[in-house]
Length: 251
Length: 155
Figure 1: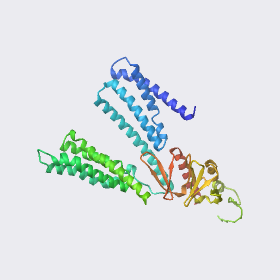
Figure 2: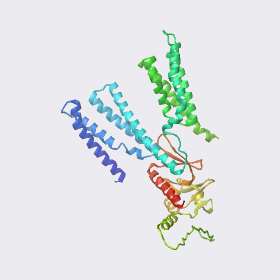
Figure 3: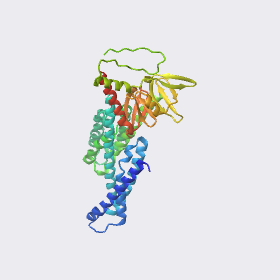
Figure 4: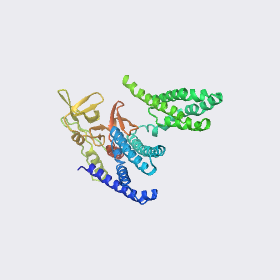
């Protein structure tokens, strides 16, 4: 058995044992029962084993890292879903909420890892005597586009709502989410992508800036407006980055 | 310090002799850093032709499925040596292994970038891309620190 395989097995066994222990201690406390079903024990042991090997995909690179990390998330989310279903029952809203929390936790761990890698790259640049390079997640490069985002996501809805007829809000209810937000989000994302490459904070900024307008001018049913600007912004940004990569090759 | 270079036709690798009245710590360190410098040319093959190229000319050495290749700013050559053998012959303060299949010349790195997927990409001479395996990052930093210390000591 190779050293890596042995380490993997040890992690799975320790994680599994810790998960089983957690099931025996926590589950009776949470469910107010003395009975811990074998299914719960199995799911907790599986989740423990999954947590034990959680850091291993990060030792890999690029495609292998993405594939292994994605596979790990898939396995963990299935086990977690089944465990939550044992606890709360098959209520899809609850299950989706817990899965969302798990996905957020994953995203945070990824972000933490990425910042660690970024710091390593900064160190390498310094040691090589190179320019410091772009800011983390290109937040500084995204800043010049923030006034436009504020105008699009906050100024425009306010103006359109003010101009709208009170009985039929065509401008803010139809033109804004189905035409203006997607087109402007896509175009600005494209422009940013062509200039600076992928800026993951740009669609997030679009989403966050529009969110107050949802509750200020509309209600929760208009939450999809946020996606109508953030998703095209992301698509435009990625397309702009692809264009930026393709043009030097064509030249 | 008085420095003298003598040309000796036929010599493949330079030899440095330090003449001193008495030995001290600084001289020992200088001798140690000089002995680490591998300055000999590297034998490469272009078609039927065998050439000896100075180490500074190379951007990188890499495995490409057929064997080991060497790339300079102008062209690529075949190399008979394995990567681990090259590692022994190359200047350890300038050349470093960045993945299982690639050794690069750190003096020719013009950019270091990180992708969203965490891939570290080094650009050599502004055009050639080389991808760094994360397992080798620590070694690269050690090599760069070593080179920096040597430059500092010489300065």
